[in-house]
Each structure stands twice: as C-alpha cells, then as structure tokens.
Length: 368
Image (cartoon, rainbow, N blue to C red; front, side, top):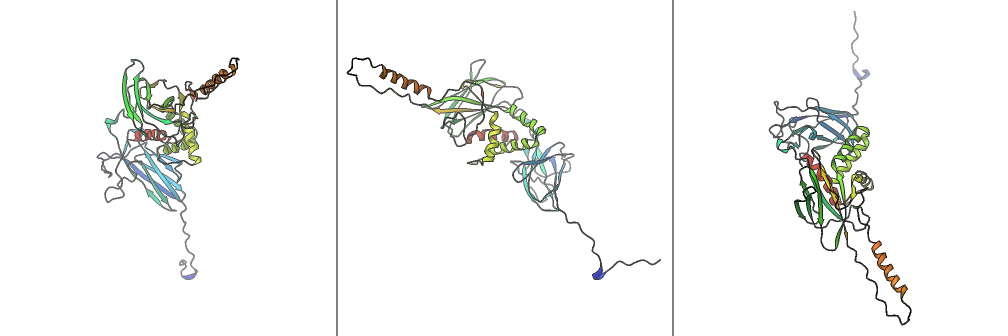
C-alpha cells in the first residue's frame, strides 16, 4: 500500500509549541551534620520543615512542608518572590553558610542569618533553592524564661509609647517576689535594654531613673499568649497571620519611620501589651518564652506655688484670695498626668527601642 510522505517546503504545517506561562521554585532541605554548607549523600534529608513563599511585599502567600527533604511551589506567575525556611520547631536553629564550593547543585542557597532567599522568576523557569540546617544540643532551654525590659519617655503624655519617643538611662533591679531578695541588677544607657534569663517564678522589676523623672506604669507583653494567638490565626485566618508575621519583621527593622499601612499592622500586633502599675509582678512559668516590659517614664512636673498676695488694707478677711490660691494648688495637682494603677488593656506600644526588643526576641529564637 502507498504511504503519504510528510509535507516539506513552504506548504508544511509547523507543529505548535506551547509557550510556558508559569514558573517553579523547588529545593532540598538537609541536616548539615558537619556544618560545611555542602550536601553529602550520607547527610539526612529533613522531613516536615516549613518553607514559606512570600511575594515582593513579604506577604506569605503559600507554605510547603518537606518530604524526604524536598519541597516545591508550582504554577507561579512571573515576578519577585522570597523563600523562607523555618526549622526552629524541629530543633534546627542555624542555617549553613551560603554558596560554599563550586557546585551550585549541592550547596546551601539561603541567607545564613535570615533563612531567606529572594528570586525573580520568568515564565518557564525552575529555580532551585536548597538549605542546610543544623542545631545544637547545648541550646536546649535557651529560648525559655526570658525577661526583656526597655523604657520610653512619654513626651506627649498620652500614656502610650510612640515610634519617635526616646529612651532614657535607667537601672533595673529584679526581685524575687516570694523571698524578697534581689536576683539581678543592671544599669543601662540611653537606647539600651536589659535582657536576662530567669528561673521560673514571680518577680518584680524596679526601675530607677535620674532626678526629674518618674515611673508612671509598666507595660507587659506575655510572649506565650502572643505566639499562641498567632498560631490560631495561622489556621483560622491565613491572611491575618501573614499580616502579623510581617509586623514582626517590621519590629526588627531599623527604619526611622513606618508607612501608615505598616504602622497599622504594628499597632494591631502591639495590642497584646497591658498597661499595669510599676509594682505589678511578672510570672515566668515552666517552658514559657517569657515577658517583655516597657517602662513608661515621664518628666516630673513642677508644683506651681501660689503667688504671694499683698496685705489688703481692708478689714475684711481675704477669703477669695485664699480660695483662689487653694484652687490654683488643687488644679495643679489634678492636671498632672494620672498615675498608672489599673490593669487595663494597652492598645499600642511602639518605640524604636520597644520595637527592636520584640524583633530581637524573634531573632533570638533563631539564634541570630
């Protein structure tokens, strides 16, 4: 039987070729046993390590968990992305050194300090981002029982830390509330903080500042309650959790100012602070992360002295003059800023130093 020959020349119909429109990010996460930044065959590929995918605004848009070390994000539109690897919950606190050796196929690609890698994808691209992780048994218990204290000068008297308010030099004394014994004392300079690790128990913190200043209140942040609520939001409202995560990153930044959108996210997160009296105790429980305190400082307002009145020539008793002086004294006392003392929800807490404390807390969890 005759067979038709395929068409050739100008009349031949070309085979259509599909043009790719999406891209892929994939990689391998392994336990870098010798901490050399290069993946060996004998080294373990890690399961259940969380890998987050963020857009150019650092909003988390997807997550993957490794299986036999592998993860992938497929069908991605061209654009800029950031990958973050988090092994903390599995006991891997550190990231291997980046781009070691000559073989890009077996090295660690993520930043060794932040655990992230940015990439710009084009259609049809497959970007491989690997990461080596390791831990240290000596760090067991390192991320528990912390107490961090910083202060802010409440210059505008609104009883709330504002982003541009300053800190002042202070001395902090930590006392065991049960025994009454002082367990720690530290003198800090301006823009500094105290951060210590304590045994489980209940403590009070005394803040001493220079003459002319007074302690109005202490603002408490329970890190366990914060992390628990963030975990719940991750499952109940992924978008809300992503906003919280971004706010945490803003806290660790050294930006001089925030955009209105960023400030709103930080304010929402910092509603976890509670404004209490300066003498309110702090309880550090077993297996807890600990507590962050912001000491509210204010300048002492001078007490207005009554203006001396000339001796009246009249025989009448100068009742009005005395009343006026008494009224002036009373007004001065009542118009000073109210002292703290009520356990009220504290809606905002955001000084440059205060933000740095909270951001530092999360960085410490990574061993940064």
